[in-house]
Image (tube, rainbow, N blue to C red; front, side, top):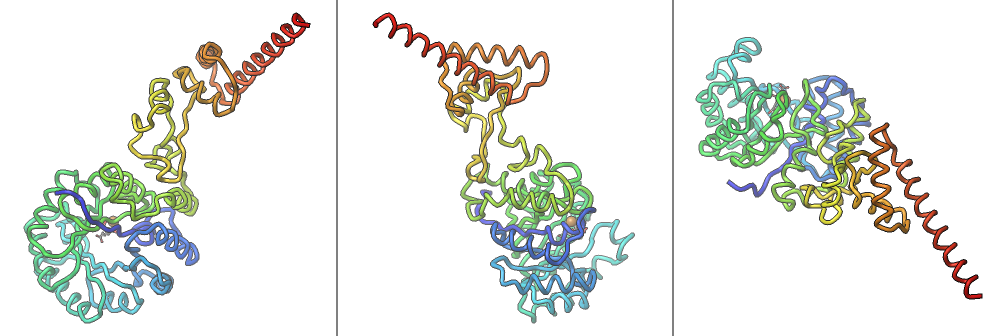
Length: 392
Ligand code: HCA
Ligand code: CU
């Protein structure tokens, strides 16, 4: 199935708050909410108002900001939580309960029938409250599929808006997610949301597979922060979708990704990973001479993401032994230095020789280029003077 329409449920302010280093103040949450809203995500998911008195106030504050994004809060499957959630003024309520044997045995201890009954009670109440309603099963991947479908079909009959699949422990792979979502697609009318943890590095691929199988909503957080090593990162999902079809993500202000990643990295005191999608420091850096030459001729040769669409620029790294003369020529042009091809080739040889000896900086390369250009100018001037004096 082709991916046409989808929404992002941005959960930095819920799942992200479960990241070990996240202690967002109210002001910080408001700043994050505003940035995400400017970026254009469709939903913001907020920590349960039942978590603490401050969480409740923060939920009310963000729900009252008048953002374009819809606000959701995330609660356990019980009436008391649902009442408090609605009172905060959010647009929607995300209800979750565990269906795996682990959670049924070691967490809430309820049978599948008891889960269905509980969910029915909660949604009968929510239906009267004019809010978007979502029901999701924690640890869906390690639940008995027939149990899962039975629960989803029961809540679907109540007319809820979305059902969610949660890979709580990051155990799923793209093929499993695809199969689970496509079967669910054939069994319920509601929209389908996917929430995937990244314990084995599949969170982006799993989210993409979910969309291919008919999911309509994907949960993300900035930099992927969340429990343990987190969930599908916003930037990574956007990069994946852009690679599939840039039009799919043209509804978002892509140049804000850098500010989002930097803001969250700063707030939770981590670095943006060097190899991060789009915003990692080497994401648009080309090194080998063969790559550099082709990229200079046509960047698409080695770039699936256009840095300029994300408000960024590419960098061609030339101060190393793998460099090539086309890249060195391009650096000379950037510095507005007039050099012959022979000179550039000679300097390229020098760079290779010197970087075999020790690590070279761009400054050293630049001074080789500048010296050569100065020498060339000196030689040309001397030649001109000689011609003039002969003519005199
Ligand atoms: C958690 C809950 C959750 C919920 C996902 C959802 C998960 O374990 O903290 O509401 O769909 O990963 O199961 O984040
Ligand atoms: Cu989670």
